[in-house]
Structures are given as C-alpha cells and as structure tokens.
Length: 345
Image 1 (cartoon, rainbow, N blue to C red):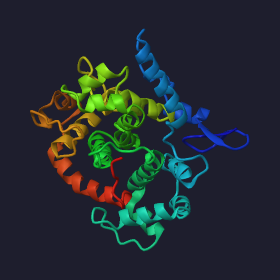
Image 2: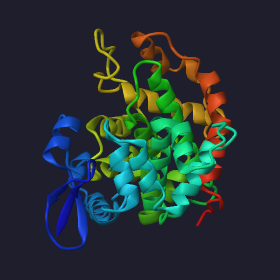
Image 3: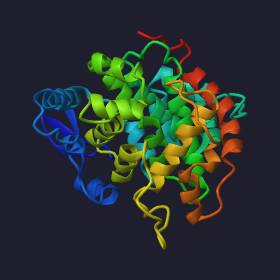
C-alpha cells in the first residue's frame, strides 16, 4: 500500500493502490512535540464490560471511518498541503482549485460575497482577493465537509455546521488579538464538536439519553459514556495527524481552565490557551442563538472565569462586538457551502 504524508503530500513509502495517509519525519518534527495515538485519548473505562465494549466499538469506528483529511492524491488533499506550506504560490493554488468545479464555484462565491466584497472574474483574481488566510478557510471547510457529509445530523440540528463555522472563525479572530494565527486555530474550532456527529450516528441510544436528560448535557454524557464528545473530537483530530495543540485544545474545550494562572507563559506556549478561546467562542455561539442543546447562560460571556483567565495575556477583546460582526458573515459563508440546506436525518 502506498503511503503519503497527510501534511506535505510527500510519498512516505511506495506501493500499490489504495493510498493511505501517514506523516513524514520532517512534518512530524515541525508539527508535533509528542505524537499521540488516537485511542490513547479515549479513557479506559475500568472493569465495566458495557463501557469497555463502547470504547472498543468507538476505536473500531474511528479506525475505519474517522479520517477527516481529503482522499490522498485528490485536488483537495494537495490544496490542503499547500494551505499548510510557507512556499505555496497563487498559481499552484489556482491550478488545483480549477480541477474541482464545485470548489471553484465556492471560491468565486466567497470572494464575491457581500462579506468579502470582491469583484473577481477569474480564479486567480478570486484567490488574490481572498488571500491565503481566507482561502485556507475555504479549503479546510471543503475538505472536512466532504469527508463528514456522510454523517446525518440529529433532528433540529440544522445549524450544527453554521455553529462550527462561527466558532472556527471567532476562535481565529480571538487568537489574532494575541499572535498571528496559522490555521490550526480555525481547524480546532471547526472540529471541536464533531464528536457529537459520531455519537448520534453510531451510538444513537446514548446520544438520546444525553440530549433528553434532565441534567446539563456535560454531566449526563459522563454518566452515559466512558468518553466525552470532546475526547471523540480530539481522537478524530489525532487520527488525521493534526498538530498536538489542536488535539489538546479540542480535548479540553468544554472545561478548559487549568488549576491556576500561568505567570510568564505566552499564548502560544500555554497548553490551555487555545482551548479557552474555543470555549469562549462556544459560549458566544450560545449567546447569539446558535445553541445546540437549548441551554442558556446565566451571565454574559465576558464575566465567565475563562474570560478573566484570558486577561493575564493582555486586554480582553470586545467579545460581543466580535460575535456580532462574525455572525452575518458566517451565515453567508454557510450558505455558500450548503446551497442545499442540511436536513436532519
């Protein structure tokens, strides 16, 4: 079997079809402090046979169906690699985009949308107008949606992907207040809740207990399952060789605060900083009406402990203003990717 690097598309080992993903030594050195196996992110449930069986079922499902990277050697996969390269050129991106008519249409629609304000007539003009940062969003969205579109949405969850787009965009905007984002912030926000889709599609009985429980869903999922939706989402991220800071942030996004402040730490070196950003973006999504579980906060997001914790790294951005600005742009972006609305199963 031929294996190619999930990040740079270099051939790791020659072989015959089919092609699978791996990670080359150079990308492993540059993107990972420590490699983690995806199954190690799912806690061992002790001696309970039923919970042991649930964990084994999930590991088997993620092993066979948990890939979120585009298919090896596809235009999307090569674009994904370019989006993570410091040496990519406009011409390289244009050549690959034009191999996929649907992606070309999305790039044009995004560039010429009211949110982007472009007047592009060629793919090159559209790419130039968007810039690599916005183009990276389109590429990540298209690749992940293509891979996960086979999974049904729970009834009443038509806003699921709109919410994830909102959290991804807002996470990246919040990160930009402290450092220059590199795309991993957007990916973490986009993927942080994908565990819910796997629960609904493969563990419907447990999902129903969580959704219809009398207690907050985060409490209920811990009683019903030996793992959380965040741990599933993190395992999905690790399964596709995403950077360790993405995996860690996704794991802890529901309860991101460490035991104490981190004096002298920087945002990029803090192990929980990105998780806090996702958590705040999640709560802002609830504030503006994108809640999945119809649970409402008792206090504004700006007053949450996570927001106070963030102040050790500098002045807190105006969270409500950022959310209000991002919402209409996110809705427009969602309409570009979902010209036909996503319907519940």
